Length: 380
Ligand SMILES: Cc1cc2nc3c(=O)[nH]c(=O)nc-3n(C[C@H](O)[C@H](O)[C@H](O)COP(=O)(O)OP(=O)(O)OC[C@H]3O[C@@H](n4cnc5c(N)ncnc54)[C@H](O)[C@@H]3O)c2cc1C
Image (cartoon, rainbow, N blue to C red):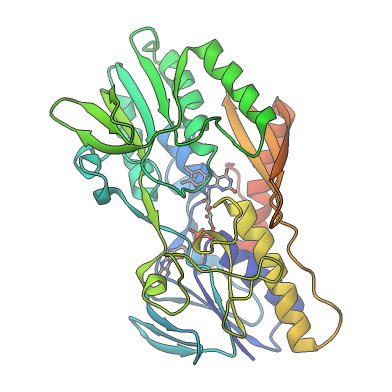
């Protein structure tokens, strides 16, 4: 069997590892990615706030060595889900089973003014560049804002304002600064009222302004104001933006996409095309766009593929569960366990925040690096 995985992010790495662990070199697993390595989403905040260096958090794909697995650096240009054939910049690939794990692309240029300001913090390049921008920031009005939905890791903007507070305190700039958070939701984490209450308390303690139920549609860079979807304006000296998300073009131009994302069976993650699966941010399965959900879905697809190849046992189905770590600053981390089941309202409770959960989060990262890349990782 030729199993072709498109995208070596959270979902693709977990899937490739699970398949190699069980199938060994009995079948060929090919993993394609256009990049040179992997960076956890949460590591972007670590670099931006000077808690780690870019090289600390970069995991090169050249370290991927597993039985039956071949990694190929290639950009996917088009996908034919009927023929299970993929065109790339290094030639075509054909598969018996195809899995699309290409994530979501980010488009800062689609929000007028955001590319000019150059201060989005969701791409690796954007977050890493902000490290120097923050170091040179003399204090002033900081606005963190979301420009469209859906967006990855919905708690990340809330974490960013809390970490920004600590950063400005440490630099002696907090008294000369204000911090505002512009979000499309009524509460910070809609599936978890408990986590949202804890965040509201943290915002109030730190004098962080919550600007709900609107998005930033443009930046007027001359007047230095963020223009919001309800017509209101929020003045800024430093704007940190969550850019527009879209599925990669190879997906949106394929027969797989419906309304811009890939619909899948919520239990099996199979698309409308037989033997073609999709996991993670590129799907419209209904879970948040986050690594933990991509990973959980990848484990289910691995079980589905293994059962299909071996013909034994009823494969595992997806339970919509994910554990999200939530940075409160000062080395305190909370843990939100959320369950998204099709047709039911999502639910999620909060544990912590505590130093013990901060240690848990480090172990979460290091265990994935060890499992996927076969090496130790000292920074989490
Ligand atoms: C600031 C921030 C903080 C975050 N914090 C967390 C967190 O604490 N916990 C959490 O669970 N999630 C977090 N996330 C979200 C998480 O990073 C993503 O949701 C997760 O990586 C999605 O996994 P994925 O496999 O679907 O896609 P990705 O991990 O994005 O992988 C997609 C891969 O596809 C490749 N690719 C894309 N297009 C092509 C193409 N045309 N050809 C070839 N390769 C291509 C990309 O290079 C990439 O490697 C955070 C995100 C951000 C931005």
